[in-house]
Image 1 (cartoon, rainbow, N blue to C red):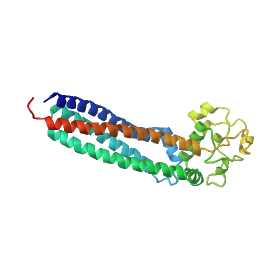
Image 2 (image 1 turned 45 degrees about the vertical axis):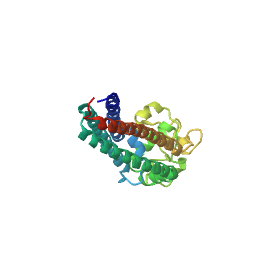
Image 3 (image 1 turned 120 degrees about the horizontal axis):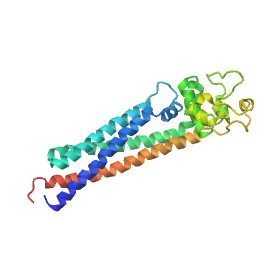
Image 4 (image 1 turned 90 degrees about the vertical axis):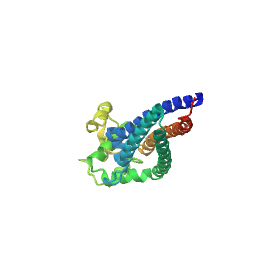
Length: 257
């Protein structure tokens, strides 16, 4: 093989090593979405129906896609090292499939992002009204309100006329109140102790968080979706370069020096 083919081979091995690592990273992100309790709690508070598992489905898609990219990257390295036209041909085909899948996923992500921005307030309010009696949902709201120092979707009035009944004279979750033990409550929301529960339950602005959680939650969701989009673009660029070098290398396999 000539100098150009040798360079193409080296670059193909290098790019596929990066591609292989990226596949492992995507696989890790999917697993992270399933096991991280903070992620799970935020997912709970934007679901209206307890049977709505779209987020878990998305996490499984990440795992499957990451595993596929991981295997394809490994196959590309093997094809370059062994100088196999057959392996490289399959590799090019599968990388093209990955690129088309990424384009489709990016379009869906953008559409879903816009939908979340348009409907986030309605989703959050409906979640409080219909599902706050579920322990997992209450825990999700407690964690969000503690971290972002907010109350309800728009304000504390979102807790009026909901399916859950607070004990005694309580009108809002304790995590809506300014606490005397915030650090301990972050580890265990059930231990949240208001500095002045009477004033908080009467919605005294000095003892209750007056802002809603919608803006903080929206920013959190957009931040993570932006990271995913950035990673996807980076991988797509690597894939395009990999196809170019694979084609160049394939053309020179079997030629005399």
